[in-house]
Structures are given as structure tokens and as C-alpha cells.
Image (tube, rainbow, N blue to C red):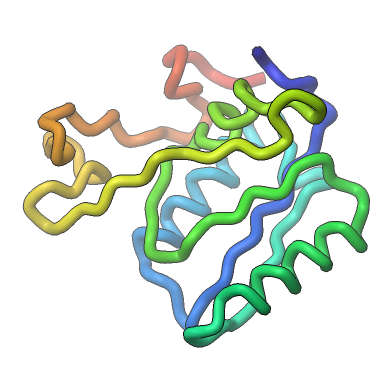
Length: 148
């Protein structure tokens, strides 16, 4: 199910002071995709980040509190900074979300190392599945078409 375009998303993450370049590249690609297609993040959603040490529960709860106090976005996406993701990840998660039936949606994550990195063209993930092609600004990776 495609979510209504006017639904907004806030991205939230904890970090130890610095984040991995691969994570930041994923965030930039996500924002480029969002600007080109749905504007769920850049027009009414946003980003919440907080520095954290080994105690994750308190800072995560703090991010949730900030999101609820903000009160303008429909969805909160919590992501870890040691991960990468595709530019259309939020849209893919929202396809399965519903405020009443499925208010919490998650995704399965796989670890990678230099030999099996799925974010490098031509590489395969641990299951042997070819990595998706790199996303280019203005194209929808699901359809191969330019955005509105």
C-alpha cells in the first residue's frame, strides 16, 4: 500500500560523536530521493540525532520524547549509524505501515564486510544476491524513471 504523500517522517539516530561515511552517504542519498519524489523528510519531517555512549535506552527514549513533543510528523524512523540503506527505504517501510493495523514496522538487517559489501556495484550480499545499482539523483530505483 502506498502511503499518502502528505505523511511526514522524522529520521532519528544515536551516534558516538562521529558516524561512518557509508551511513552518511546513505542519508544523503535518502534526502536526494526524498527531495525528488515525496518530500516526507524535507518538508515537515526532519532529523533528530543525539550523542550517546554505551547506554542506548535512555537516549533513544529521549529521541522518542522529542519526536512526540514535536508533533508535526506522522512517522519516526529510528536507524543505527553503523548501517547503510537504500534511498527508497522509507517508502518501502511505509508500504507496510498503517497507523491502526501496523504502527510499528521493522526491517531485517544483514552485516557485511569488505568482501561482501552490498553497497558496492558488482558485489553480492551474503546470500549471493547482486547489489542493487547505485541510485542516481532524479531516478526512482523501483521504476527507473525520473521523479516529479
